[in-house]
Amino acid sequence: MSTPVRTRQDESKAPSLMDLRGNEIRSIRLRTLVTLRWIAIVGQSMAVLAAVFALDVDLPLAGCVAVIGISIWLNLVALWTSTPSQRLTERDTLLTLLFDLAQLTSLLYLTGGLTNPFALFLLGPVTVAATVAPLRTTVGLGVATVFAAVLLALWHVPIVFRDGAAFEPPPLFVIGYAVALAIAVAFQAAYSRRVSVEAFNMSMALNATQMALEKEQRLSSLGAMAASVAHELGTPLATIKLTASELRNELTDRAELAEDAALIREQATRCRDILQRLASIKEADDAQTRRAPIFAVLKEAGGPHLQRRAQIIFRLDGEPIDDETSAQPTLERRPEIINGLRNIIQNAVDFAGSAVWIDVLGDQRSLTVRIGDDGPGFSPEILAQIGEPFATTRGSGRRDDAYAGMGLGVFIAKTLLERSGAVISFRNARNSRRPTQETDPQEPTGAVIEIVWREAAASRPST
Image (cartoon, rainbow, N blue to C red; front, side, top):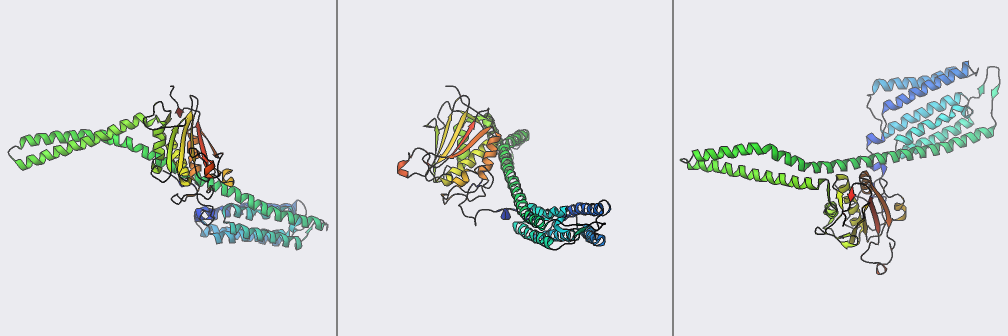
């Protein structure tokens, strides 16, 4: 399976996180928020009780109980009216988190505002939104959190102890805390969202990699299935053929029935020949399943792209290589190797001007496959990210007949080839982007991808 690799540097066409996510991924289960709210209720209750009975703080206890009681009531309603698997829409997620922010703001208003050290928990709702909600929900909740911090800095019920002493920190402290909280909201939201997006992208990319590998493995298993069918059907076909022969011999006086019996025997013989061919193909495949000459492996990997406009040139130590070349290195015909090489070859053909060079180099200790093209090369911003999921652009030189993909091709190829023990590097040719007349037409002038095996996946025969 070949996977699209890059697209033009056009944000309107490149897939974004919002395009890739479905409702189930970008939403959160209601029960998850309910569980988090129960944890907050327990924490708020313990903090209020500790302040009143352990620290002798004279709090408006009735108001605090009422605010906490509203959260308890809403949680019970959510449990009674929802199913365990129910997920919230974007709008419901925003409203739920806004309620949690308003409830916490009300409780902080009654307990000292920003002079209460627990004001730090205002970061909670926006952190949750940054992790699971779309960007606009996170931004809206962040703005609401900063607005709540400003209100609490200006208006709140002061903390007063039972002996009449009031806790009144300097105004500069309160202003500084409000500013620090606003900065923390922005930083925490950005950090949480960045981590969430990267985790999501990596999860999607790894799933795509696994799907590619599973498809290659299914295709590889077809030969074994054909051999098994040939073996299982051999005996009943032989029985049918024998019975048809006997019927034909006994029906010499009935020409029409004798012809039918002869036809049955002929078709049984034909089925036997077909099954024998399938078995012979499987035996030939078995001889190459473990290892094959490097040209055979590269030709199999690049097969879907051999007839495209860019010419693919295969070389061994700088010389042309084909099926007749002797003393070729061998390479394991594993699905991950075939698929990884195929994606990289497609990548080169997509951006090549007219030619792609596949060079094989190596000795007894290592084998190198170098794939280069005469395209524009990797752009500087992509070269630093190449191999990461959803890196979708390599300059603007994609051919018109190239595939427009999601940027998973190189990531899948890199992951699959690294499973086989390969080390992969990406660079531009030294003469990349120079005028055509200054370059060697027999060498790559654009992107170069180098795959090196130093383990048992590849070997070179002694000459």
